[in-house]
Image (cartoon, rainbow, N blue to C red; front, top):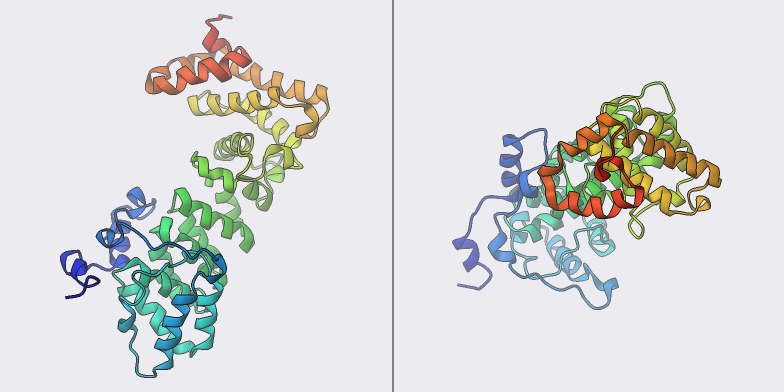
Length: 366
């Protein structure tokens, strides 16, 4: 018995698609717990193949296997079930793999891609199958791609690319609502590039940022693609929009090296002015307090020209945020919550609160 097949006999034979589908049915409107990890093939992937030193060669050996397979007219998709294990398999779009798909008969590419995604028990084969489907336009594959895309940390990049290629804007939105972490980064970025429908814009503006630090990769893209400056200064402003704007502004204040920062966001001053005005009319809540304080701290520490405004405008923004944060009801709200995360609030008190002299942490009374 070969070393390749022996671990498979010892492990689970459930396909990764069935694994994703089973977990999805347990919580159909939320991301999979732990992104579906561990996958059923975990024992086969304790270590992974290293990419070639010359990154231009990535995927070339996979393309060789595909070319040989498609050159045989009688080759069945199942013959590829273990063919890619041990090779380095790119999880993003790869030109060599795409070229191999385009060299082959379209019907066979579709049939092979569908079989590998639906029945593959090894993530290597499933990834290649998804890469094949990502070269095609067939809309009937959308549900298949969405389901495997729920295992988003690994399959998210290709699933998002495939759905966008199939003009699946609503399908992308469906997946974006059900992934987190890196998966949300991949899907939201594709959603922003696809062209934002009314439904997608509403979700992006209100629910795209979940507080994960990885949101820094796409917060600025969301603000731009969904026209945040128009929404936050418009008439249809609700708590969800204000809260997500708080998260976006907080993220953009500290995501240097990841994505667009406030300094590089042209409507920053307009959005900040509108946001603090709406914040003043919201009920106090700990999350709102922390985000607003982080925004004010960032503004206070930056030169006015770095956020595209005159000194008096910057100072006015900081004072406006502090006026809300120092209200008695806002102070009481955050003080009541200090015990929930003592380590965070100890850091917050010694840094953000100390720099801003926030009344909730200095013991001041009205």
